[in-house]
Every structure is written in C-alpha cells, then in structure tokens.
Length: 299
Image (tube, rainbow, N blue to C red; front, side, top):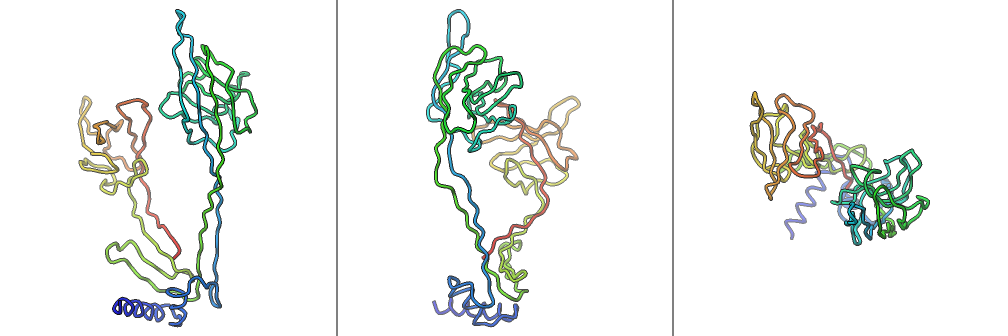
C-alpha cells in the first residue's frame, strides 16, 4: 500500500512539473477532491443528452386467399418487438416502413401514391399485389388496430402498439484546468495516451486506417486487398477460386458453416467490397475501408 501511494505521489509531482501546475492543485483535482470541482482555476462542463425510450410491439395474425377455398396464414406473431420504427410514425411514401424480423413483411406508415395509405404490414417484395393488412388511423397515434385488407387478404386481427418508458439521460462531464503539455502513454498499447490538451485532461486512442465488416474492424487485411485466410470479425476467411477464366475471391464461414462470399475479385480493391449470403435474405453486406481517427474521452 505504501509503495502504491508513493508511486501516485511521484506521478502527481511529475505531472505538476510538466504541466506548470502546483502540486497541491494536482492532488486536489486528480486524486482527492474531484467532487469539489469547480474550484478556483478550474471549470466544469456538463452536457446532457435525452433519448426517448419506447418499444413498438406487433401482435396477431391474418390469412390470405390462396384459391380453391384455402386460406393459409400469411403472418402470425405474438408480442414481437419491431426495432427501427420512430416514436412517432411518419408518412413518406414507403420510407416510413421497417422489416418485421424474419417474417418477409414490412411494417409502418405508407402511402403508395395511388390512394392507398395507412399504418400496417405489407409483403416485403410485392407490397400491394400480395396479402397485407392495415389501419387508416392517424399516424401520430401510439396504437393501431389493422382492419383493412390489401390484395388477397382474407381474414385476421392484428395490432401495432407502442410502450413508452422513461427517457434515457446521458450525462458527460468535462473537467478543465489551466496549463498543458503533460502526456502519459500506455506502454502496452502506444496508441493510447492521457494528455492535458487546451486545459482538459483527455484519454485519447489513435485508431489506424482499417477495413471494417459489419461494424467490426479487420486489421489483418491489407490495402489494396490481397489473398487472406484466417479469423476476422467473427468469421473464418478463405481465399477461393471461381469463374472462367478463374479469379480469386473471399468466402466467409460462421460457426454454423453458413457462408458469405464476395461478389467479385478483390484484386486491386481499395475502398469497398460487397458480400452476399448463400441464404435468404440475400441482402448485400458491404466491407468498407475506414481512414485513421482518434477517439477522445474526458477523465
């Protein structure tokens, strides 16, 4: 314990010398009495962000007319949460709709420009030619009972409701002091450092340029892209051959051997590369090259 206190004291003295601050100020500000800020020579800035908290939930079912007096179920869900919908729905063509997870339908406010509009569920691929179900209530509501049918809709009952929760408050506090110039660098990760910048003691992390796939950095890939085999972003990567004449492309496999593959050769690619899964939905998954950046957090 004594050695730890001695190390802290020596660090504080070194910071004071480098930054041109009194030792007593460093101890008061950085180690002992942060809760007393602001004090003379310091200032504190507090930024409050308020984020609405809510959840849209879809319930019910509806059937469609398949001919020959048969009426299969088109969609059936129970307390299915719908991510991506805004708190207040908006009417903007088809832009106010989001996918119903794993169902092949979309949900939200819509207007086809030809007299059909409302809030409801529509087929993802054939919006107004396949069975759908909707309400004509005002889009600024918090609950909708679908009763109108689209195309070969036959029968059902379905609701879209919003549950409201207390707003999420995020508070960021920045402490500022006079002086500058002090730098402490992480010996295990030289890209991380603590610096006194313009009077603020900041934690900085330098992030080098890199490829990014599904939000995950892929530091093992070169630019321009070249053959690669290994594990990145939760996938096992392989370099495979296809075509006539043959060309090289990337194939990615997850833990269940589900495959994603590049749509073209990676040779010479420097900005982005598109991948597609072997399974539905066949949505494009881009990989992009991200330039260098610095993240900053106040201490």
